Amino acid sequence: MQELVAKFEHVYIDQTAVGSSLARRLRELFPDDRVSVVEAPPLAAGELSAREFSRSKRLLYVTPFKGKFFKRCPGSRPGLSCCNYFVLNWGLQCDMNCSYCYLQSFINTPMLTIYSNLDDALNELREIGEAGLKAQALRVGTGETVDSLSLDPLTLYSQTLIEFFRDYPAWTLEFKTKSNKVDQFLNSPHAGNVVVSWSVNPQHIVEREEHGTASLSERLEAAHKCVGHGYRLAFHIDPMIWHPEWRENYGALVDEIAARFTPEQLPYMSVGALRFQPEQRAMMRERFGLNSYVTQAETFSGRDGKLRYDAAVRQEMFQFVLQRFHAHNPAWRLFMCMESPETWLKVAGTSPFKQPHMHDLFDPKVVRAAEAT
Image (cartoon, rainbow, N blue to C red):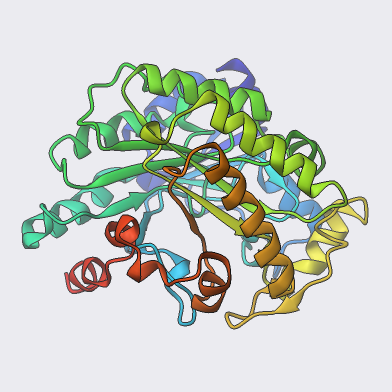
């Protein structure tokens, strides 16, 4: 905990959030001279510079969120096959520092923001359940605009969410992280519907591109802890990053996962390839230079406007990983994240909508019902 507290230079609490349980907890954890109550957040003028973006990870701002918490995953854009994933965002910005992070394409606030009104988010979910969807197989994740668990020892939001989802056993709650912060919720009673997931890459990529994150071995050890407490797991080999030794390194990653875990412990896994908005390329190069596989990548514009590897490169990488897993055990259940139906046909030979073992992930009726509320 002290290491996490030391990470932040200062905590700013919006005066409208002073009475929140989160504000009270942070005031107990941080020294008085590192906490300020403010009427409005200090703002940057225009777009953040690379230096301002980096510093924003060391300044914490607590405020209520005035918008809608619950929404569809960005993978639902036209031209992509979506896995019926919904997101519930409780913050904005990440305290870790991956070279490819898509937050670099749009964040213009000079602080890492945590929303103080998690109860309002739970009320949104409660209304969805009361609208007749309590028995629907919704998948809800919290790791889109903030890492699900890296700050959780400060917020303890995981405990609140796990308790809420106990009353909705048909729903699935997913925490997605690159940290190893799991001890704070391991003993929380749960309904068996909580998936703790990790974005994973070979250690070579972790060291070169995923700065400030837990090592691969730390992530896998944290996953073992969760299995021991009855939590389900997921791994997301995403983004796969091309580099000269990609076959050896991703092959070793697959072998290690297959040796340490079983298909029964993981309801699903995903694979995805490097993709990013064109406007973040300059920011990435300014922050990470050319000593990065990401900033050197040869990419082309996709249907969604993002820059991606050539389709043939993506297909080769996906086929390699899928075949490697299935050589260990055909029961491994993998899907491709944010990919086109054409890629699915080239890699898997069929659409995800036509695969029985993928039906609960890609059934469009789930999306239509949730969006109608």
